[in-house]
Length: 88
Image 1: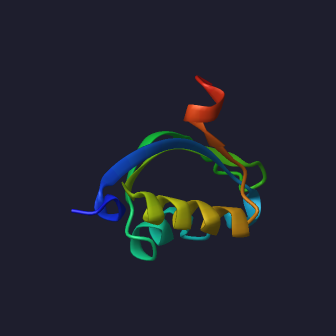
Image 2 (image 1 turned 90 degrees about the vertical axis):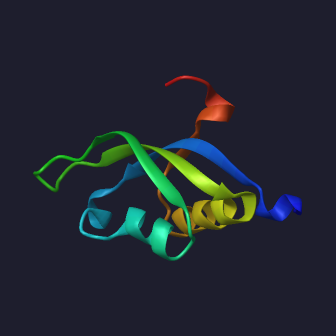
């Protein structure tokens, strides 16, 4: 088995701005990028005025995870990598 097919995981915190409250951002990470997502914590207000956030465990190959993170970057969403910043 090559390293490309080895499953790994990465924990991130993602801010969802109000313009993306109605968009299936997490669903697209699963359907378009083949990731398994575990939502560890979340806050998304019902008022649709303020930003929300999700703590996510992303599971997939390194390529799948990187492609998913690139997608979030293309949307200009803020993403924090737990491995780089430690505990929140």
